[in-house]
Image (cartoon, rainbow, N blue to C red):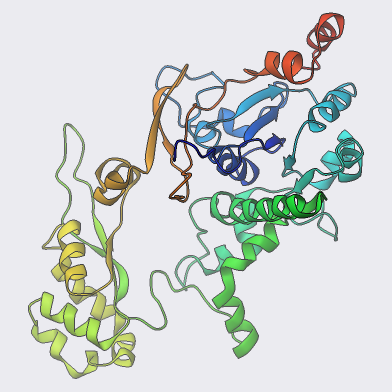
Length: 419
């Protein structure tokens, strides 16, 4: 960061009422670029990620050590407000009157029950950017349907396309929409609304249906159905316009300590005849690859099972790293199927770029956090503090930010409103 330039979102305060991932990840991006982000949580109804593995050995039972939660909440403050108590609404509105952005990702009935709809909040802060990220939108027959990423992936069509054609759908392995698509769209929308406010002085409501946001990632499949009238089917690792296109077994990684050897894989994607010729050359021009049936994409697709078996006979003689590097040198798309350990500790590209930031947490210890999602040359984002302990900022919010002290401050604590 240039010494005389503040971070681009310095001076912006966000009340982050969201939970799990779709909202908090968007809040994390804002925090990395200078916004003051206050996570509003409840000790009586914890964010589920606070109780989710993994946790450091020996710290089981604490609500402050989940690696899942902590990774999405660096740079933030935490204020515990028991929204099940009617008196909490007044405190929430006092807080929101000081904020530029409100962020939440519940079904619409939750903010209606709290009395914190856009109309309610705009009455105390007319220029606020009010962000709803409900699963299926604020209106329509499914507005109050419950669900998380594990439900959203099937509903949006991703799970239908994941797996093998002769087996049941297997899903995408993680709640992908929560971590990438939804928070990415939410961040862009917030920045656009802040830009509009800077120019006009006007706040506004942002409604981001997680379902509709997620559908943007299925463009090719939707176009296939719309333009050709065909429904794309599961293909496993294959691709209709490439062959070979699969994950190939390579040499096992030798066992370390008392562990077993680790199976290793490399993805190879051949889209053009030139890439096919380069792959053949790297394999040593084996006799089978010279057969006429493998000479065209159509032929390779028609004999794909045997093509993959023969290609894998070669990859099994090499390490995954060797396969990827040798094919990349020849212009053939290839990449190692990396484990979490590979990405964190062994990937030379990520290490050189310093993606992961290590921060010291008072309970979880020194742990890795995802670094900023993008790099600004003049004002790059920073991670300066680890995820907050539950209720860590209560005194700051109540006493300093809201100016509440004396008998009322005591009442908030005694009556478990700030809780």
